[in-house]
Length: 302
Image (cartoon, rainbow, N blue to C red; front, side, top):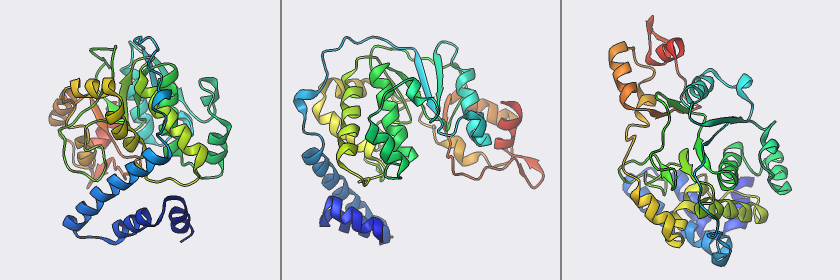
């Protein structure tokens, strides 16, 4: 109840009602309409309260390719669950052409200076580790450029970006989902060259937001900022449009990991699908009725 009161106080009655309706609404058609209204109101609020610095966008830096590769797991590799270690090892194994960096809370300050209030709000629980990760990725990409890959991504071939002079992401065919991205971009896996104004824009948006707020307006804040940027950054809009559809099965492996393993079928799939987003809260099993599962196969052979 306290969280809902804080949300009402922070963002007003309309967004509070929308949040409440989505919590209780089960009708798909009605829910779809509520979500459309939610997107409009959240972006309106963000544009009025946070993103009001059009003249402060850094678009004068020289764009330069970057071969830095960033992965973050807050607790560090040694304290990561088995699935996370599996994914991190797959990323590192396939990053021979990149400078691989594995960050944790213990070494973030070796790479980047985040404002004091970010650390304070992380420590007191206002900022979750997920939101901290969103802030961190754009802080790093803004300073160094490079490729960000979520630690829950299983990679099956050497990582290569065809054009390192501009933005790239995994991109699915656009479809109606509850997230405002509609699969047009993927904040979990993206390349941004050093000096790109998009990274500067999103990082400043995050900093401005958390400098003034103690409550998260929406879990997908990173995607709302990205959607708004498409209307303000013409270069980024063009670069995103230029990204061809790729890795359209990025979520499929997660759905079959607990199925009995057919080695030939699984290997054929992995060969043709280099990036695979898994879920850190999923309960993966190695054996089903005494038979090795796809997850068990990955653990034993990768």
